[in-house]
Length: 149
Image 1 (cartoon, rainbow, N blue to C red):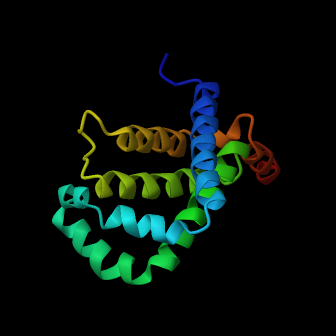
Image 2: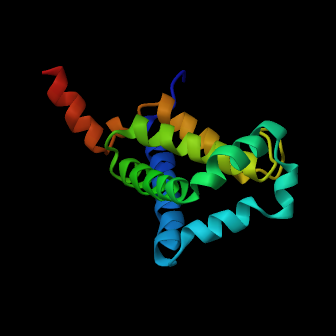
C-alpha cells in the first residue's frame, strides 16, 4: 500500500478542527483574552523561548497585543471551521501550522521536544495540508468536482 486512505486524513482533519474550536471557545467566553495573552507572554517561562522569538514578541506582539489577540482568535475560529467542514482545508491547515509553531516557540519547545504537544498537532496539520483531506467527506470535494467539470 503506497497511499494513506483519505478517510484516515478525515479523522485527523476533524480532530484538528475540534481542537481549534474548543480552544477558541474558551478565549471567546472570557472577557479579555488580550490581558490573558499578555500575562502568558510576560511569564518567567518565556525565557525558555528562542532569543529571536522573544525579540519578536517584545518588539512586535506585545506593543500590538490587542491586534494579535484578535488574530489568534480569528485564526483559531477560521481554521477550526475550515477543518471541521473540509472547506478550504489547506488554508485551514496552514493557519493551524502557523498557530501551533507559535504556541510551541512561546513555550520554549522544539519539534523534537518529547513533551511538545504543539509539535505533534503541527505535524497533524501538515499531514492534513499535504493529503488534501477536505476532498473526502468535506466541502472541498464538492468544489473540486465542480471545478473538474
